[in-house]
Length: 86
Image 1 (cartoon, one colour):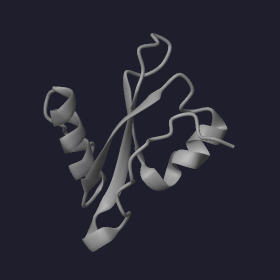
Image 2 (image 1 turned 180 degrees about the horizontal axis):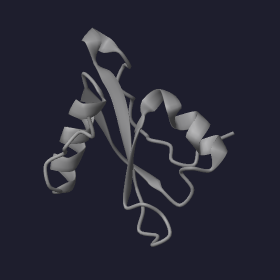
Image 3 (image 1 turned 30 degrees about the horizontal axis):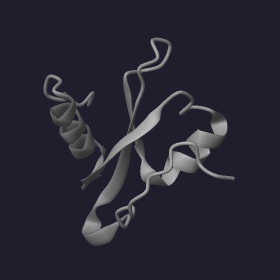
Image 4 (image 1 turned 30 degrees about the vertical axis):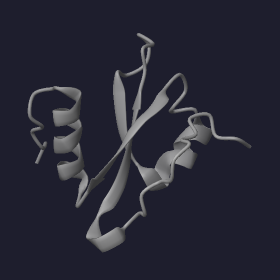
């Protein structure tokens, strides 16, 4: 089965030197979120569950943890700084 949002280049190596790999998907569809950040290891499961329907791969983020990935994601998207819910 070919993945709907395949990426032509090589994926970063997950877990290299203590880093995690995250993926950003975007959508222009008003019924979908504008952007979704997920852990790369969860992509196939989310594809199969239909959670990435009408979304396309945008870019990878490599970060030490979820909060750092969200901070980088907000910065790249031009949004206000990320504030963790903790």
